[in-house]
Image (cartoon, rainbow, N blue to C red; front, top):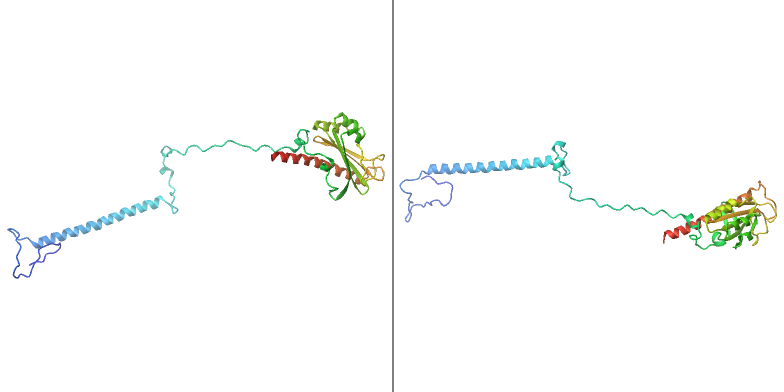
Length: 292
């Protein structure tokens, strides 16, 4: 008998003793060899189909990987492609994010002008006295150190003036005249600061003053009388609503000449310091107003 190959559940063959029975197949006996070859052929074809399908799947996966590699660079970004491969403008979806927010243009307010605060009595409201304009007991300008002498203040401006200055101050409505004296090595200088309501009045005072318009020298507090009869050097200027004057000379009564550069330097130092103090007054008030 030929052996049966492949499959399960086929007839079981016993050793033939008592109780064994041959199966019945109808009128013909099967060709077992032909059946075995047909089964083997079917199995062989199924294995090839399975192998072939795996190969096709591998080829498909490889193609997908190749497309992915071509489509991206090493950083995962789209690789450069010719302009002809890019979508037309009409194919690009519209921006749906909406317009960007707009903000109203703003600008910082212009800085306050310090001179505005010292040009009109209505704005120039800070405390005012000889000691606020000329604080301390001495003054250093460069290498010169001046000792502060006596101070004075009066609303009768003409009473502290000499020559034609009293008339000029009265005509332009001077409201106050403050004075202070400094001295150094036998030279003394008195500074007079005339106060007006407006800048125009102070400017007019400077214009109207002449060579005989002189502030009266202030002695006392260690400074002897000076410039009462001797020739002295004087100056006139203005800034804001203030007109300021200097008169400088020797404390020993000597006349001042063009060669006495020390007297000129003393008068110039105190004139410059007075200008700075008036300007600082305006700066302080402008700063306070800006911080309100």
